[in-house]
Image (tube, rainbow, N blue to C red):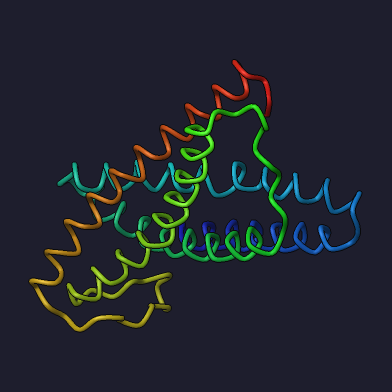
Length: 196
């Protein structure tokens, strides 16, 4: 049931992002406002899902109770939903003009901003794919609902599963650290520099 609500929410977010993308094509004044709204969609839809996913994953590996199975069944469809939203977001990002960084920003901060965005998008794209590959290597289906499962993308192999599980965990920690640094930078620019 949770997966159904998650899928409905993700579908709504994807439709919202695509509509905003269409609005950016209407002209300069409408397009600028729509592009700004679209960028806010990252914070409204994608960021909470990614943060929730990180905490669900941490709870999943720390729990051996009956909650563990429930968290796994929540983690898988949420990972697929994030993957779909990231694909939509990347399409929008590469097809619309991004606002320039402040001109007075030190070069190391410009480099850090660009590198952190690239790292965020790479990790948000790679982690769900890695999780899907990991479950395929374990021989477990990735169930989206009671009747819909994703196809395996790797043959079952215990050694590959063990490697992918470690990689998935380490990259999840890296994503968590990157999200925290990104949040700190956003707060610095919003509260200290006040340059939005």
